[in-house]
Amino acid sequence: MPRVLPVLALLLALLLAGALAVPGPARAGDMPGAGSVNTSQVLEGVAIEGYDPVAYFTDGKPEMGDPAITLEWNGAIWRFATPDHRDLFAAQPEHYAPQYGGFCALAVSKGYTATVDPRAFRIIDGKLYLAYSLRALEQWEKNLPDSTEAGRRNWQGD
Image 1 (tube, one colour):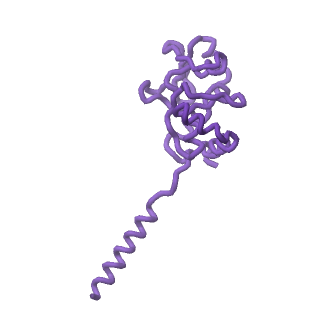
Image 2 (image 1 turned 60 degrees about the vertical axis):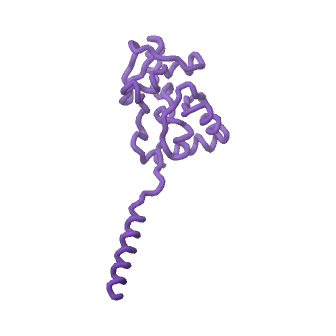
Image 3 (image 1 turned 120 degrees about the vertical axis):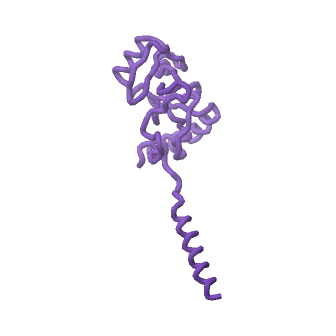
């Protein structure tokens, strides 16, 4: 019986050490990729799956960019439908680039990052937001002021 007590104490100490080693919920600002540009998993290094970020503003809809009309910015390759769109982006990239590096707005507002469907978008207060899907976009929009503020805080790591 005297040997059981030290063994139990050792087991308890190991369990406690294991519990303390489990990290808490991560915020987007703490996660790999946060603060960077979401680049395509199919088109290596290409931002927003090759869609033209300026077209969302000028045409009011997503439009695929031309692989021959590109610009490198913020560690990613951006494609554009026209040279004029490329020039607009070059002059004001922060204006045209999607918020949260092009990651899903709903995911970032909840503290993680997720890829997007570039066709699921909204322009709010002159800023482009993308989402994983139209359904995710609708969920994000349900409480827009809180969603955008939570996303901003998480993205900046506040």
